[in-house]
Length: 212
Image (cartoon, rainbow, N blue to C red; front, side, top):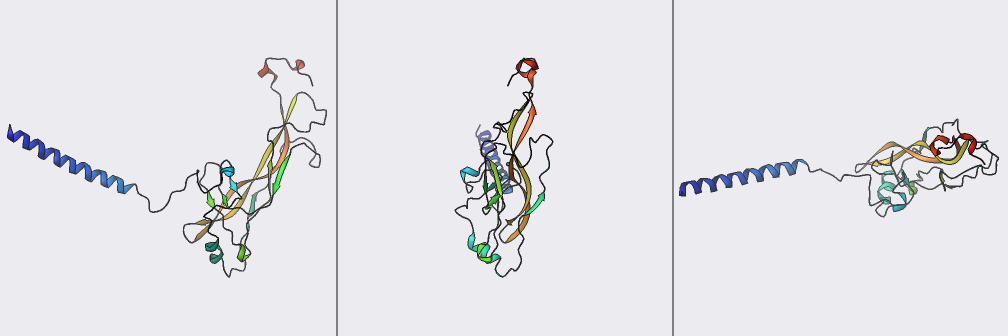
């Protein structure tokens, strides 16, 4: 009986050591050398969480670092428009008409951007002491999906709505400790009036029952 107990204890200790060694190796294998940036970033202001850009400077923005990094540079790259705004077949009215789509236009420095809403945030380089400021014209819809051209007698077969339009810009961002790179980001460029046919079948009504 004593021999059996001793064997059990030795076996248990050997198993525990092996398990601990295996766990230690596994833990060390998943450690990363640097910070990992996620789509959710505490540095980005709450008002920018659902956007692809932010013009509010983070508290830890490295002003001194960027100003020193670009000290002495004579020519620095500015944001570049990569993708022009494509014409829409379902855009209502003439470009000069008042379409009732209320929008806000700003022209402020960009501090963080990301290609898509689910992508990690990237820090945009700004070095105002070296005359390098990256800013673009941003126009956002105040009330997206609201009705537009309401002062016109439009046919009842169509529904008008305000739509946010975006274009792709190329912006210089920080990479690692002392490197830079250009990335593409979709930024709002205008708020325009569009239309779509009303789906009468969806409401269970024949088309001639819909009146203005």
